[in-house]
Length: 331
Image 1: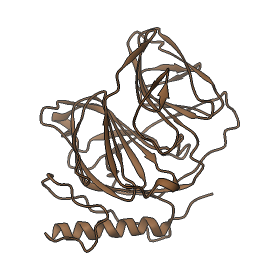
Image 2: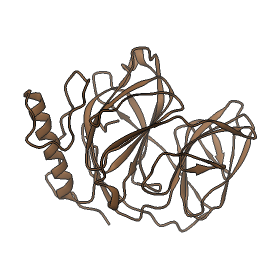
Image 3: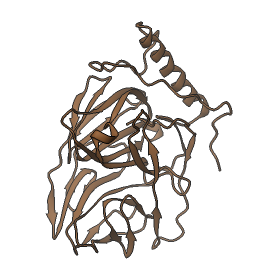
Image 4: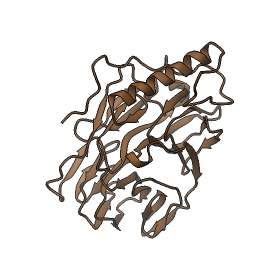
């Protein structure tokens, strides 16, 4: 998914000190419209001033359930990415994905679509005609410095759900409760969907080197004794070897458990690019705009970093204006 905000700011992402392992930090979302005449609203919990990263997870949008007849669904034209992996996870609906390495795949509920941008990729995302309700999450993972210029790739994986007591778990990245995803990551990561029946209590062993986030879709839940409501993200600092989650309500609760070792690097995020310096981000924008201009004129670009999304009919997304002042890390 693209970041389609009209005013795109630089985001400096860096680790935050964790003085109290026992504390639960609650991140509340802000609503962001994803462009267009009928902007599809999303609820964004990462990044924000309070916290930029959870492990290498650097971006989290939660959307729906949306009536496509009212919102128009998802219609994201070809746009670029660098230095990250996109993680698409649906609860309802279907999205058609196309990218410049030739991938053409549907995003469906309970199935992982992971795109590694590396040195540069472009893709489109469009909800299908049969989709009446769209509901899911779009997440980004920052690639570490050593892997950020890797070749772009795409992977699809449908994890097999399993039960632990009154909980149903689907592990799509990393390892949890004895189940391991085969999907490659470039830093130690965890990603899993967990559904809890009313009144259920679940205790899980976790890697104490990981920081963790529980992003709630259906709630509330109680995370290690603290309530986390729908669309909120409950953050846990490294240092725990177990966590306990309870569903205090009368209906099912559902959340994504995200985690990983602290990245240990400072990154810059601007628009759909993850980089390390002002010069690098500006070079990405200049290159994408050159390819956009050439494509719009019906020509081929002199050099291609991002490529062409075959099979997509329509205009690409141009790069937004970039701030005149140098993009510098804060702190």
